[in-house]
Amino acid sequence: MVVTLKKVLISDEVDARCAEILQTNGIEVVKNTKLSKEELIAEIGKYDGLIVRSATKVTADVLAAATNLKIIGRAGTGVDNIDCNLATKKGIIVMNTPGGNTLSAAEHTCAMICSLSREIPQAVASVKDGRWERKKFMGSELYGKTLGIIGLGRIGKEVAIRMQSFGMTTIGFDPIIPAEVSVEFNVEWLPLDQIWPRADYITVHTPLIPATTNLINEKVFAACKKGVRVINVARGGIIDEVALLKALESRQCGGAGLDVYVEEPLKDFSLVQHPKVICTPHLGANTVEAQSRVAMEIAEQFVDLVQGKSLFGAINAQALSNALSPTSQPIISLGDGLGRLAGALGGVVTEPTTVTVQTYGSSLRGTGAYLGAAVLAGILKTVRSGNHLNLISAPVIAKELGYQLKTSHEDSPQNGYPALVTVTLQSGSASPITVSGTSSGASALLVAIGDATLPSPFSLQGDVIAFRSQANPQILSAVSGALAGANSSLLSYGASVPVKGQMWGFARVTPPVGDLSVLKLHTDFSVQLAM
Figure (spheres, rainbow, N blue to C red):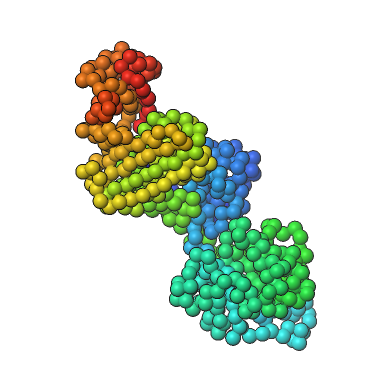
């Protein structure tokens, strides 16, 4: 899958270095941060790239109008303002800058913890209001306290390292980061139910997904130490705001540091007006350094993708991330070609279907993810219309249509080929369809269909007619004559060895044949497809 970008829209405020990097690499950039939703819908069809921060909402109706869009880049971490599921179905890459905000968000979190421990914002407001209330603002030391960190990725790790310098004990949980990794930065990995009663402070550093929505709720507050303090510089909604206010009023929670909220900008100020809450307006990544860094990173990621160097930061293109190298392109072409052939032979699928991709030869080790996606894309191109079928969208669409993908690999060569791919399409109780191929240079080659092998591999490119007929030495001349009668020229031809009196033939033609019925006198089955 080759990604070309000619014109990119920047619809939110990002550092000027973003546009400079793109333009230096030959990509036209238009920056317009004043677009209404209706104006964005009217404009987006002109662009094949879009860069946003959090203000632009890339919703279903925006994506419906994005007829040329290939990539959406978020200059930041969260992508909750982008309909990622629909973008994936449309074959649009969604990319963020996972590391650009790390230090700024970590430092903001640490500032919140320090401010909570000494009630610094409240004390500042008191003095500026002309009062001198030393006794009212009795703080507590961080030394010897326990910090619970929910989410031990980049930001969580940096928070841990910094707060350890205050003498805090750090414990934490992450469903992906294991204990043997967290111990390397002195965090004791614990399940959540063991963190709640131990922590004096709890900070969250997770994405907002169904599993983390209202993660810290009324039940969790009840399980915590009395006076626990909580910090959220991640995403609004991870801490249940209703439960938090209730815990603050009962003093079960001794304070909260909030930078993010369920609704932004705030309309209901009842939570942040509580005297034990310190609050900022989503400033975690709002530093000069972070904004410069994410602007440069998203532009560089766009350029690296176009140049085929890497796909860093893509959140919905796992199959594509390892498929950019020149050595991968022939394998992708082979998977697509075998998928198209299998799909054309199988016809429209009306039952649950299993697609099995088997690879043989050490050179194909590790290709399963993107090769399987290429096969699915090829199959789907024969059974449904649309120009959004690629390595990104095909797995999602295939799953919705009832396809199940299975992959397997053996290092040993098969049938004399050092690298061989076999695709089997099994739909319900119908007979399975199996095609096998290999690649030579940039060419995808068919070497077998079912049990019938081709003595000379056939190149899967251009407009190809596949047909089945009785084994007959005159079949080539008969088919060639029929094609000539249809004003189509035979460019190349391949045939399998006969099996049970039947053989498969393959003809590359130009132009495509308008009506395959011209072959009905010579074949019992034929299908035409564009490779």
